[in-house]
Length: 423
Image (cartoon, rainbow, N blue to C red; front, side):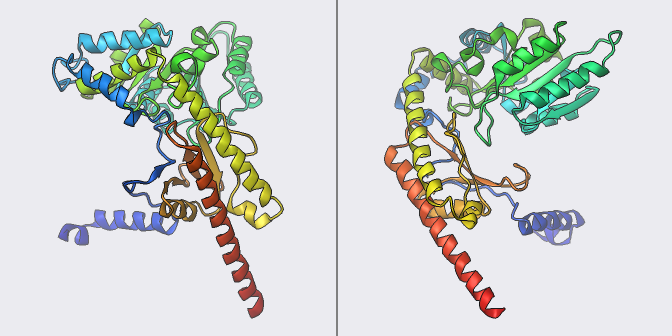
């Protein structure tokens, strides 16, 4: 503690943290209150509390050889248990081969740091996950170019510019990075159109699509295989990433790719090489949830979730229509104009922290998302629905939003009256 008071480094750290606090951007760790209603987590299918999945997991624990993996996969952390599991998962997703990793973040950093070679180009959706940016920063790619979020038209412009500037005598590879479902807005990438565009512009097959299915795994496609499988694009996508920490209630991820790509990543992906591999209980949990999915146990949960999304949006739409004539209210809360196609609903607001805290006091766990996580002007409260949420909870949540709007509008009106009186 004395060192904190005297150390120049600690003084600098305090200064930077104070600056964030003044900008209302200071992050901190908080535990959700007991008994609160979860409208925030990525536990989309509510599997983290499933007694059936828990029973499958406990049975699988009897089959593990030990607890810890004991090292990196390239040293002593590999096992036939892990290799059989990744083969089974790859087969489930109709992938040629699979490579398990400790997290989706590690997977993306590994993919984008080592696959692009000198002179190669990475084109990415402007809202791609931070892990992709971190991978690109340490890659040998000659250039990285963003395109407007989910805009096939702008992607076409970017790719045509790449083609026009390229030389036939200097071969290169192009990597296009997208998410099948985006984490902040919950919108879906136009995968079919992107694939068609790539095939039209790159007949030599030197363009490679990489799709992050983190927020789609378990929710889309037959038995939760993801959007790539749902659209029948397995053979059109170079690399797929499925993570287990969201709808599947586990942790870790798998990279689906060709066998030679898998072997290359084993040799060059530093996040895989220089870290201890997942423990056997973690692998057992992953195996359990894939057994659960293979038994068709998630499809009804996904359907229930879709019905709840429709119900919540219907109530939100009625709330939006009620205040549509008020400009001040529009700034307080902006509700999406179309029904979301995922359980992630973004409520844009000029006071994300105030709204989130109000909802939390009312018993609903939601989170404020502010810059730099999202661009300035797009601050929001991020709502995530779950299969175990109820219609009554959805309706009550909208009532809480309405009460907050009315209270904030009343405060704003009173302030205007006070200012007007002083003038």
